[in-house]
Structure formats: C-alpha cells, structure tokens
Length: 177
Image 1 (cartoon, rainbow, N blue to C red):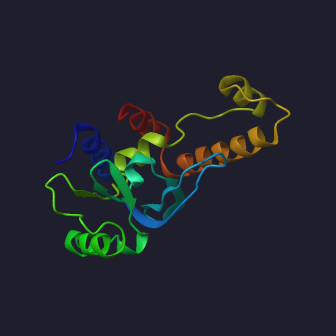
Image 2 (cartoon, rainbow, N blue to C red; image 1 turned 135 degrees about the vertical axis):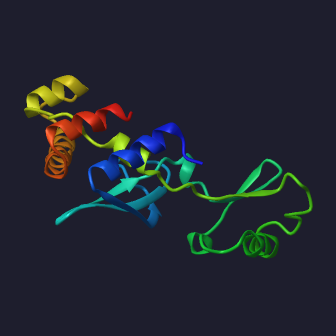
C-alpha cells in the first residue's frame, strides 16, 4: 500500500508523462565521507525523448541486508539479493551461525529500494544561483575544492530538473515533499 507521499509522487510522474526506473547497481561507499557502504541505484527518468540517468545512494538503514540471530547481525552477500529467505537461511546456517532459525526471533532483513517519492524528494528544486551564494547558504568556504565539486553537482542536477519539467511543474514537485 502506498503512503500519501508515494501516491503524490506517482501522480506527479503520471501527470507530467514521466516514467521512472530504479535499478540496483551495487553496494559501496557513495558519498566522499561515507564510513559505511550503502546500496547505489541507477535512476532513469524518461519523458518523451528526454532521458535523464543518475545514481542515487540509498540510506544506510534501507541498504541493510543481514541475518539477525539474537543481538548479532550477520551481513549477507549481495549475490543473495534475489534468493528466497529459505536459501538465505540455509547459507547462514552453513556458513555463519549453525543455530540460525531455531528461535522465532531469528530473521532476515532485506534491503528496501528507494521509492519514486524518495528520489523526487531529494532532487534539487531551486536554482543554486552563484557559487558564492551557494557557499553562503550551505556553509561552505568559497576556497574549498569540495564546495566547488558539490556546487557543480547541484548545478548539473538543477539543469537536468529544468530540462525535464517546466517552472510550474517544478513548483508542483516542491509540493510533494
């Protein structure tokens, strides 16, 4: 069942004639300062002849793929993503914890892919303006190479948003948050 936010996102995409495809790529460190890995997806938004592809780093929590035995979490290899829970449980019993599955509380936590809403909510919806304005607004030092790289990424995303949707549609996009 879709949440109200997910319904708003689906309605927005339908109203604007867009199709969104979210495809799992890999689990890795995504942001420069990441200490943990997360699931990375390729997102493709299509509208007529316009196509925009980009990577999306999911939350670390939603990227979790583990077998829980008591208070211990055992990471499950990404190669098991498409396997059934019984196949995963067998792997855990044979390779990680022989008693897995003997207690009702033992469970497998699977990754949760991002929703259309999650993707749309994270998009840049306002022109970042000049580099100086961007740094001032978000607390970056104007001498920072990191700030320049982040600004370039935000600016590129903003230009893609503008290519995909009209000004009035971008205003509607802001409303689904």
